[in-house]
Image: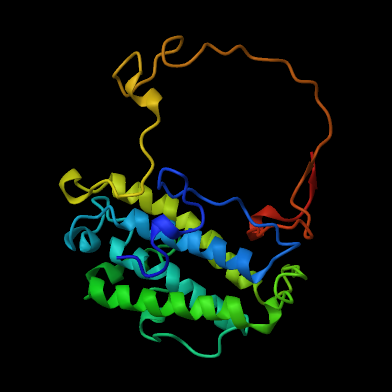
Length: 260
């Protein structure tokens, strides 16, 4: 099932065989090894989530509300973005699968209702998208390990990756994949229970889940959580906005400045 590293040998696996997320990378000191470790961690976490689907039916069943694509789209969407963004950045010079990189490129934009027509198309098979993911994995690993922009002199001279660096697109792919780890999880929760399963290498429920004083889905103040008093906070001037030179990947809405 896994097109990259299996969970038990993937960076981020703990002593119990559970795959955990690695910390956000420091982009002021990137090595080929650290970039590949974070890529493997992101990639395998995503595929571990999708191992929670039983058979092929849930890959093609649109969510009941009809506001998102079926899961087969998201299974192909995250690898597609790596390819398209790395091509724009000049890291890759050709597509991996031009057709797939067209149909899997654009998801649902709430401002453009007409893009939902793709739910009526004939999607590729799970096997075809699986093979595509294998090809993209190999392509991205090759870029990480060989592209001259990440030349770290065998790990002795880490590279700074900022918004002007071609590998900014690579770190966009990492964080984009992690966004879909969360949003696809929501779609999993909306899938009929007979079509999902707990993946191996998935974290167990926190022990406190079995110790809830109430079994209601509506928490009770003073029982399920403490009563919290409001605290007075003195007013002051604060600065909002992420500096352009902050050493982590950021989306457009994180930048800019405002004094409040």
